[in-house]
Length: 195
Image (cartoon, rainbow, N blue to C red):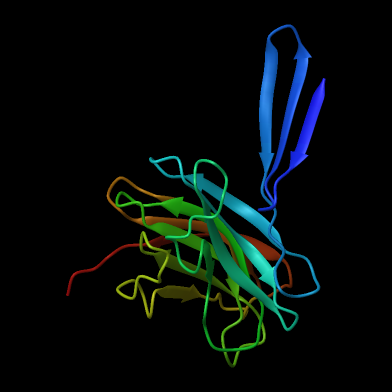
């Protein structure tokens, strides 16, 4: 038996039965950005309170923008996060910005990584961004809430995954273009240094 319904808020609920007593419910959340192109989510993490955070990118018709979306445990946008549940990375330049990985630190600040073309560059750098609990950029992190890394070959470089150590160090894995035109594995360790 399959029961399907579409709510006005875009949440779809699907309930299936595989037999005696085996019933499960599936909810689907969909987001379509303002542009005519592909929107994608790649990294996901669940907070201690059950809220769901994921990162990816949306197409803005001009280029791709790194985003984070936070949903309540019920699967609806958390209106207390960023702009009605949606964070859009705002950095200068017209290049694409992709979100690939997301993790939570001990204070449940979201740390995201991906790739972004900075103003004046032609290829992407690894970007790491930290958000406060309300979905605003943590200005105390890096430079204006972001840390960039570009290898010697000048990119394109991408951060694919992020993890936080018990000591609060941020580990980012990804791909760094090499001088031969292929990619090498890169591991970045971001530590707070008190001056």
